[in-house]
Length: 326
Image 1 (tube, rainbow, N blue to C red):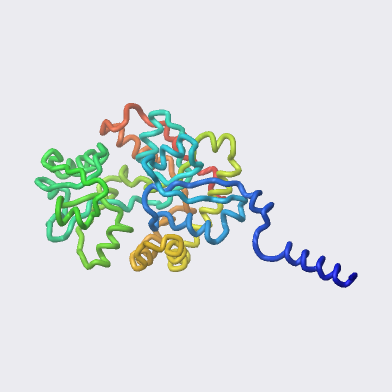
Image 2 (cartoon, rainbow, N blue to C red; image 1 turned 90 degrees about the horizontal axis):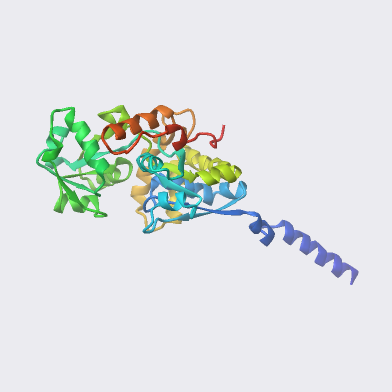
């Protein structure tokens, strides 16, 4: 009987020390959510890595990655319905001048990788070629302002462009059926074109003005989180940073983690996109996620000059580097 009691005790000890989390350990994790800006893609890989590798858990967090619904990520984060989100500098800028309490806490990609793309056979090789063509967009005034500003540099007239709202229509479908060119992120749609064997002419907006080399996308939170729960913000970014660093150093492993989490994604596209983005996440910054005041000021000034803002942005309130790992 005594031996049996000792054996039972030993088993209990081993079970307590063995694999899996106890209910108490699970309860100790702080539950937070991060809302994506779009369907899952390689802009988001670092978040999936941080979740799969246990980086969030190591920082005391249980993070749910949410896909955006009718309410966008910025709206959910600003209202406090989600603690974190993926957004864009342009959206944060527009929100801040309307006193919406959203704050950018990290740049996912250091330089703007977006631009106007068209099939090579369309013959659009410079902004002057936009005249007389159909542009497929999503109906934002920013689109016309950006296009107009780079066309003006070459004495071209944006009023001669036919703007068509294509909504969520796939780029490849749209340029075959409805329009001549559209605004894309090369790291996803451009890479997909390469895999399809479809040659594109790509005009990156940052190549026409340093003011258009803004942060897109960014990670966001709200002012209440920063004020009331800075430790959670710091923990979230510490884990996310580690996730993006792995995506930089080991893009194939990171891509596979994204694919494991989102098996409906195209494997070849994810792998090639991940390799393309890996050196661009941090690029020339001292650390992943770093944001510069001049980048925020330059773009906000450009938006104000183009009558996209009702008043000037207080740039220092729009972003912070305070929660990035030192």
